[in-house]
Length: 178
Image 1 (cartoon, rainbow, N blue to C red):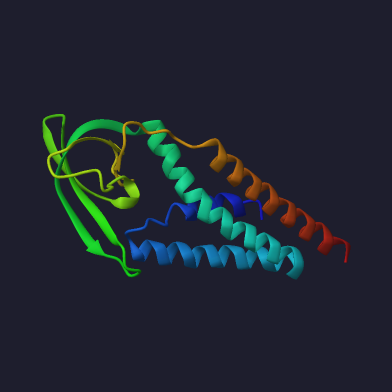
Image 2 (spheres, rainbow, N blue to C red):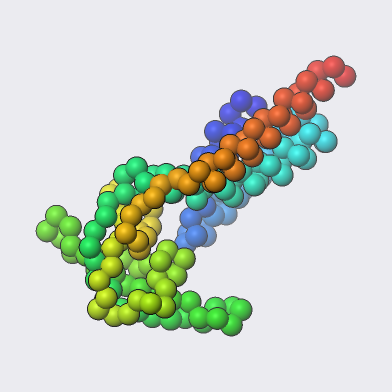
């Protein structure tokens, strides 16, 4: 029970948007962890803990990404080499920018989607700033800085964690009395 929040935080980082195998593995581990905690807490508090725990996983993954890029992200001047569009399921077009930059004598290339900063204002040949993870765990983002973890996201994760822990404590104390 004490490891539930730590395990959920670890699993939340297994949810990258581009790797389906890790996404399904993270989802399966989340379900196993939440069902085990639900069984230990009982039906009422267990359901509340499971809902808050699942919400915590959804918020903690992007929060950890923001934190890591804020702590160790490297800012590079880059050039947009190519911009391509694709058709989305619901009718609007998505954009992907192919960005090239040079670091430590090597030329690097990355594909950056519209959720990571490739918007309509960018065209081929534009100069941009890209934030990368030096160890390559996270996908690069377009932008002038790596702002890190926002206070709103930190408070949301903290509130979900506190609520989840309250349900776990209530469920365990309630089962002990019975």
